[in-house]
Image (cartoon, helix red, strand yellow):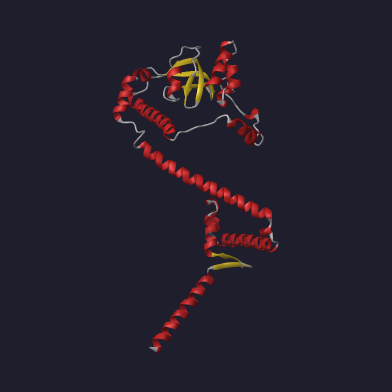
Length: 305
C-alpha cells in the first residue's frame, strides 16, 4: 500500500515537472511581465500578409520577427511603468474602442440575420414560379420582341406638398431641369437636371415605369408616388433595341417578378409594423452631422449626360 502511494506521488511530481517544463519551453522571450509564447508568435505570423509569410518561415525571418515583438514588449512595459494606462485619454480611447467593437458586432449580427432571412424569402415569399414567368412573357411579349431604352428626367421630393410646388413652378414656365436642380432630393440626377437613363423596362420601380413608358417625348407626367417619394417625370427620348431571345427574356422576367414581389413585401411589412417616418427631422441632422464634417469638392465629381 505504501509502495502504491509512493509511486502515485512520484508520478504526480513527474507530471507537474513535465507540465512546468513544457510551459517554460513554450516561452520564446520575456520582457518584464510580458511574455512571447510560441502560440502568440505563430498567431502574429499568420496575421501578417501572405507575401511576407514565406520569408518569416525562414530562420532569419523568424529571428527578425521575434526581435520586432520584443521591441513592442519593451515599449509596452515602459508605457506601463510610465503610467500611460492610468491616463484619462488612454481610458477614454479604450472606452470608445469598446463601444465601436460592440457596434460592429451588432452590425455583423444584424447583417447575418438579414442575409439568412433573405435566403428564406428568396425560396418562398418572393420566388417567381415558372407559370408566373411564362404568363408575364406572354402578356408582355412586345417588350422583348421590340424592346426600347428610355432617357427621362425626374424630380423627386418627399411630400405631395413639395411635388405640387415643383409642378406649379413648371406650369409657370420654369425649366424642368432648373426645378430638378433646385428641388429634387435625388442629388445624383439633380446635378444633371433630373436626367436618368437609358434604362429598359424592369430596371426601375413599377410605379415609375408604368408612367414613363406611357409618355410621349417631351410630355410631363402628373405627380407619381413610389416607395421613394413623389416624382414628376418627363420623357426625353426612346431608342429601339435588338430583340431579346426568349431564354434571356425569361431570366430577366424572373428578376423583375421577384423584385416586384420584394417591393410589395416591404410595403406590406410597413403596414404590419406600423412604420412611421418623420423626414423633416433629417434636414437639420444632415446639416449638423455631415455637411460640416465631410466637405465635397465639386470639381472632382464627373457628371456624364
